[in-house]
Image 1 (cartoon, rainbow, N blue to C red):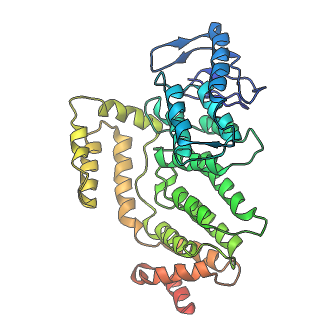
Image 2: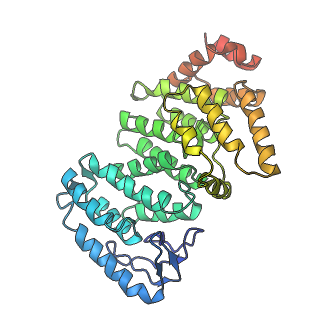
Image 3: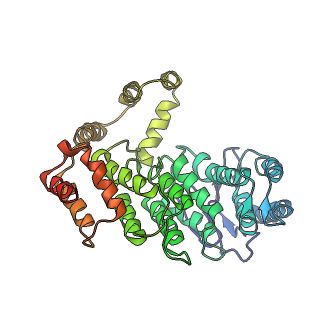
Length: 380
């Protein structure tokens, strides 16, 4: 599969293609294709370079009729579905043509961002096993596609990035860093000064608790640091009223529930996929009974499945360590307490968000080290 972006020649574990820099935004030229495996069983070779170019031109022409007024309608999306998914596989040419359309038509009905995100997710996350994994090389090609116009991430593209984080099983740190940087630019780069609106707050909520993000649904130290940076940048501004509550919830999550589900590495996922594909293993039956199950029942069922997954001694040790980490997670450690004190005392004054955080922590006073309890008393 060709996952090389229009501005980058990258070789990832998922492909064997080399792409040249794109001289035309609407028609990327694949200059050399060594061998590309596809789900339809076909294999593309160097002799098919001309055919790839013709396909790219044809796709650009087919999509040229859409977005003429700078917007894509629900009816346009319905027509594009028939074009893009005609053969059941999203190609690099189709993807580049859609990114070109997104550049000239960033607005539209709600079906447009949904369709755009769906196509990109199919290309990057669903067309190879194990599904759901984004590699560092693929992140670079994705960034090249997004930043190829004026280096600015549009709202449509931000929705795409957040959707990928929500749908992915695991993404590299470079994906988190890219999304964080673009959200921060949107917040601090406003003409009237840094401010968090309802739109940016929604982005932050999706970013921090995205399953494919840094800590899955738990808040990591990097994510907590990112939120404190935004807190410092927007202190005293007319932010969305729910920003303080979200900040307090997220930091408390980091302090008291930061050890949670950890996605297996891509290598481990390959082994698990082989197991899950075994028709003798009734994995589907286990999960089908969890629709209305309690949290405890869900945890027990998932544990029963993966305990039966073949694993080596290293994996056994990993599971034992993870169990110990979960048991420890709800207790705020001295290291965490020291970090929090440094962050709160960084500028010598409590912000509105930090006061909201302190009020939240008072609810868990019995689980806090003495040094945090002192802060709670001083802020009373």
